[in-house]
Image (tube, rainbow, N blue to C red; front, side):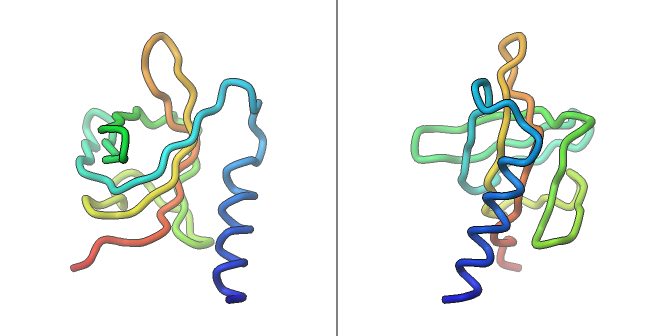
Length: 102
């Protein structure tokens, strides 16, 4: 029970750190595509697939460890925060909550 509370608290702090709440959107689901060359990833959600471009300032984390887009794998369960800029979803934070089964 304590572990779940710690994870929820960590994710909440991570997602709400240093952001302007009005324009920020959140997404969660399973990663189905990672394109490191295009600097994008796609998340499968209950409402459909979401493609996000990763901001150069994005924080990608798994637990307390900092990660890069190349560390994100198909099948990872994630929570992300993004803003829509010029019709594109720009991801500023991505938290890996469960890594893909190997």
